[in-house]
Image (cartoon, rainbow, N blue to C red; front, side, top):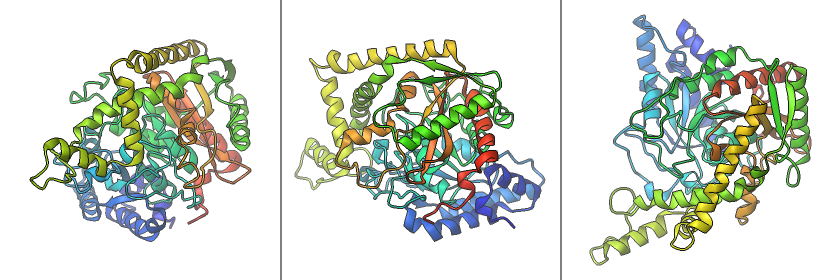
Amino acid sequence: MTDITKLTAAETAARIASGALTAVEVTEAHLARIEAVDEKVRAFLHVDREGALAQARAVDAKRERGEELGPLAGVPLALKDIFTTEGVPTTVGSKILEGWIPPYDATLTRRLKAADVVILGKTNMDEFAMGSSTENSAYGPTGNPWDLTRIPGGSGGGSSAALAAYMAPLAIGTDTGGSIRQPAAVTGTVGVKPTYGAVSRYGMVAFSSSLDQGGPCARTVLDAALLHEVIAGHDPLDSTSIDAPVPAVVEAARNGSVQGMRVGVVKQFRGEGYQAGVIQRFDESVALLKELGAEIVELDCPSFDLALSAYYLIAPSECSSNLARFDGLRYGRRSGDDGTRSAEEVTALTRAEGFGPEVKRRIMLGTYALSSGYYDAYYGSAQKVRTLITRDFEKAFEQVDVIVSPTTPTTAFPIGERADDPMAMYLADLCTIPTNLAGNAAMSLPCGLAPEDGLPVGLQIIAPALQDDRLYKVGAAVEAAFVEKWGHPLLEEAPSL
C-alpha cells in the first residue's frame, strides 16, 4: 500500500470516507512521521497528540454511524501558531506569549474543527509573523526539507516545512507581505493568499491589520482549494470580513484551463537581484501557458517599484499599534513584578525580555513613522503609494485575467546568510508585497527546480479581488501540464530527509 503520508488530502479523505483507511490510522501515521523527522526539521512548536487522536476517533465514529463526511473529514493539518486554539498553546513564535493557553478558538480554528479536519499541532513561525525565513522565531529556526541548512521561507516556514517533509498533507499560513506564498515557493508546495477579508481574522494574532490574511497551504492545487472552501466565508466577528459568496474554487481546481485567457507579465518583476535559474523557470512557465492556449500580455506597473518601501512603513506602523497590547499586565509574560516596580517599569521589562530584535526594530520604525511631525511624510506618503499600486493593478486587470511572476527572486538561502542584513531579508518579498497592499488574491505553486542548486522555484499567479477561483483554474492547468512534462517535485522524497 502507498505510504499514508504520501497521499494527497483529497485521496486521504476519499479513503477514510470509503472505509479503506480509518482517521485514526491516518493520524497515527502522521504523528509517527513527525516523531521520526521533526527533530531535524523543527517545523512544530507544539504537537497535540491526544487532541488529534480524539478528533480522529470522532470522525471514525461518525462514519460508523453512517453519517455523511465532509470533503476533508479526518485529514490531518498543521496550524500556524498565530491562530488561537482553545486549550492548546499559542505563542506566535514569541517569548512574550510563552505558555499562554487561549480560552477560545479563532473562527478559522472553529471552522476546521467543524469540518472534521484533524489538527496535529501548531507550527513554527517568525515572531509575530515578522520575517521571511523563520529565523526570527524565539524558539529557533526551522530547516527546509530540501536542504536543512537553508530557510523554509517565512513567516510561515513551519507550515511549509511540515508539508514538504510529509508531516501533514494540509497546513494553514498567514500572509501579510508574502508569508504564505514565499515559503510555498522555496519548499515546492502550494500556498494561497485569498482576497483580503475572505478568511476571518478573528482569533488571529494581529501584525498589520490592513494586510494580514490567513490562507490554505498544501502540496497540490486541488488540496488547497478544498481547504480554502472550509476556512473562507463571512464572519460577523471580523469587521473586515467580506459578506460575499465564496468563489467556486474547488470546481475551478477540478476544471483547470487557461484556454483563451489573457495572462499578464509585469516588467517590474525581473531584473537585478533575480537568480538566473528562477528567471529561467519562470520564462519556461510563461511559454507553457502560451502552449496551453493563453495570450501573453506585457504589462508596465511603475508603482510596483515603490511597493517594498511603502510596505515597510505601513506594516511597522500598524504593528507598533497592535503590539501595544502586550504590556505584561493583562496576559502572557510578566517580568520584574516583585512589588517594588511601577506598572510602567514592569511593562518596559516585559517588552524588553519578551520581544525579539526584529519585532523591536519594527515597533521602533512604526512608532517613528506615526509620530507627530513625521506622520504625513512617512505613513501618509506610504498610503498614497498604496493607492497608486492599487490603481496599477486595476489598469492591469482591464487588460488581463491574471498576472504571473516569479514568487521569489531567489531560491531558499542558507540559514544565517541574511540575518545581519535586514534589507537583503526584506527583498525576499519583492514580488509578493504589491498584492497585499492592493488586497488581491494570489497563489504560489511549484514550477520546477533551479539548475544552479536543485532547489524549488515558485510561480506566482495574481487575480483580482473576489476572483480567487481564477487562481485555481490557472494553477490546476499549470500543475497538470508540469506533472505531465516533468513530474511533480514533491511526489518524491525531499532530498535531505
